[in-house]
Length: 131
Length: 313
Image 1 (cartoon, rainbow over the protein chains, first blue to last red):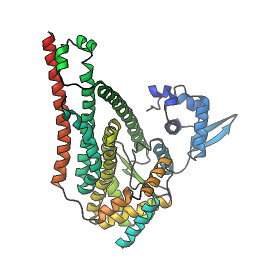
Image 2 (tube, rainbow over the protein chains, first blue to last red; image 1 turned 135 degrees about the vertical axis):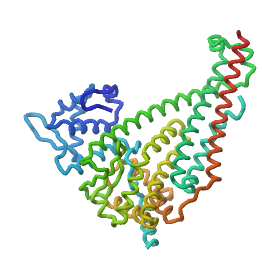
Image 3 (tube, rainbow over the protein chains, first blue to last red; image 1 turned 90 degrees about the horizontal axis):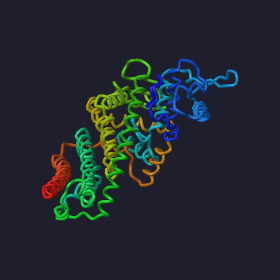
Image 4 (cartoon, one colour; image 1 turned 30 degrees about the vertical axis):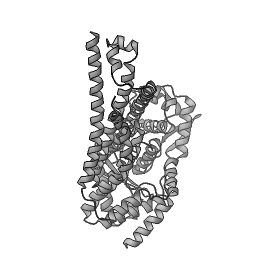
């Protein structure tokens, strides 16, 4: 776990051992606490460790494609920021990233888990019977 | 070594096959405690036994005997654990400790990240309603836990059902349910035979929250409908989920077994399970036998070593 203030833990020096989702969450965290749009270089600096510049760029564009980040071009570089919209929705997107990252860890207690098609049919029948 | 030493290695299998029955027949709060504590105790006992098996062969090596000032004739007088068994036990123990360590570390980081996510959610209230059209609701572990509910989910439920949803998530938050999941998964990482037990722990905490919500609403059928409607609404607008979850759904479908959601609804439509003392006693006995065998084996080995040290001196 990384502290955004810049205290990198040992793990950040070994990006290869970390999942892509985890890196996405780390990048997103940096941007959410950044206060201003950041360039890939600035993101890389704040994450600490020896992440390759291209890795940071890849993660940023992936998050942009997912609709989590906005970006604007300034000079030759893109500057990234969390999507500026209703704060709850941003939280929700963050939760999705958390979800993807740690699906197997399942730290979010969901009201209902995913249904298979036969589950869906079964539920409809149960509702019909229950009236 | 007495044959009883192998019991803690076999009992997790029994626990795995009986976990579902326990989850269905005990009141969910009791089932959660029994399954979680059993998983932890059985994982510990099986790891201790693996260690003892490896150790009892290790002390037979001349070099270890001389370093430990052990009399070899006395050691050789003890029951034999064959070298292959000891090697396998040692390897399994290393694997168990490594897997548990990794899983524990991952889980701690996941929970810490979730805690920060919980404190970063907008507002100061326990419940956050997001303007999201997709139906979703979950509790984020933290100090305090926060509950996120989307507009889409609220729209899919009647007022009474919304109350059930809220009471359900509050039960997760108030009882730190994520800790039970964490402990059960840790145990399952150390001893993969316990995975079905960990899965059932995930199920019974949902049941715990369901029954609590049903009790607060005073209407079990209403709670059942709330879950069914919420699940169908989520399925209609599925949040982006990892492929693995979809794959699990597909597997459940192929095997023809209903998934956890229909199982929860069916449980609420049936009469609530009473506390079966017989089942409870059986579970406790299983854990007690496992623990006692491990302790007895440890005591035997300890005595043998002391004897060997005495004769060596």
